[in-house]
Image (cartoon, rainbow, N blue to C red; front, top):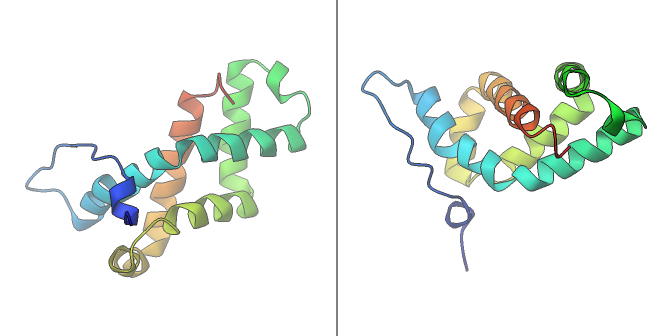
Length: 124
């Protein structure tokens, strides 16, 4: 049976001598999880946007991007859903690292996810 790690794509991101443990965890764990869950994140955000703003698809891309940024900054339930989807794909060892600085990792998750959704705004 495949493990959670087996499901993730190896992104082969460069590592530097001066990379912090937080950066390494972000690049080696969080980014692959976000990529793995990408289609689900997009689907959930699309549903959220349509429930909050029925004319979302008719907005200009700049307006969609602003809505995305505001939603991910201010809607605690949405943020917690996305954070939960991300940490749910972590192994017990990775959860230990996550819990050591969850506030920082949550901020990184939402920042990366916001950029990911905004870069695909045409499919949202």
